[in-house]
Length: 463
Image (tube, rainbow, N blue to C red):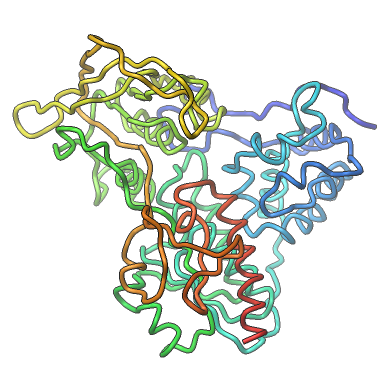
């Protein structure tokens, strides 16, 4: 019998005044009873509109039906056919703008909590199943995947299922890409990422760390000397951007990438860490995306008394997920909206001593469709801060494009592909995820990796 409640079953979470002092996961996950009750809200629509909103085309009604039947392993088997990282996607995928946005239940109430159910099913499998994925029979062909973020991991997993001998080359000392260096522990526990990668290794995927392609080996060498039939570039967009305002070179100014890498990958929140972060009293985070929310919430947990989000548009235009904005507000993050930094001040010793800002107002929409922020006259003021974190976007690292002949890129440094399948201007080289689109979401990167795997299979079969 269908559950006709107009509201989702609430996800249990840590209390805000407790969680903003620790790095444990904020959301605690559904119980079996909560998951089944939420699954019963699904109407099992004949035309399945939710699937059209999923970048990796999960058969959402089918896996939810299995949850309703309490066949949680059956639900997992459906998930894993389409998604290589269900435990990750259930936590960080913006379902509200994708599958849940298409849910019929959302017309008169809240949509089915598809993401929460995906997380429940993946977590249940990890906790109860001892079965490892079976390795496919080898087809005798080798593919190199550069980067072990969500796009690279997905492409590698799909190719391994087809029988390819896949090797992932990761520049850092730990596999996972943005999943380990960018997304905080309280949103995505690193043990979850480790287990997902172990599943891929069980499929036969070989993961090599500390391998900087463009330095240790070039793409030409992978194709011409190492025996790989094709290469997939999934290196992401990790090169930070800055505002180019006075004071950005002061001590105490971080890019969000550096700040989050020190915090998440290098465990700077642990006492006597090898990569400490300056303990700050007042922190300003410039930007309004998910990365800005992550940086601000990390700064709060690291002991800052006041953490400000400085964003030049209004709360309505803020690109971060609604849930992340709400969690940040609950944890005491202070939002300085319609505010734009103009200068970072020197305290006289080379460290940050404050940040000058001006108030903004919204004018006509710009090319993005959002109303353009316009500076208010005579509205300048100063915030007393001793740390500034810049979170205004990233672009791809130029190393790959500078060391690979015949690889076309655009003015932003993104690799140009002929279509969504990731075919580049260089024969045998494919690309996807943030390296092609610029900074985007985990699930879109996964979708690109999945599409590219099919294209690589076609290319090698027809070669």
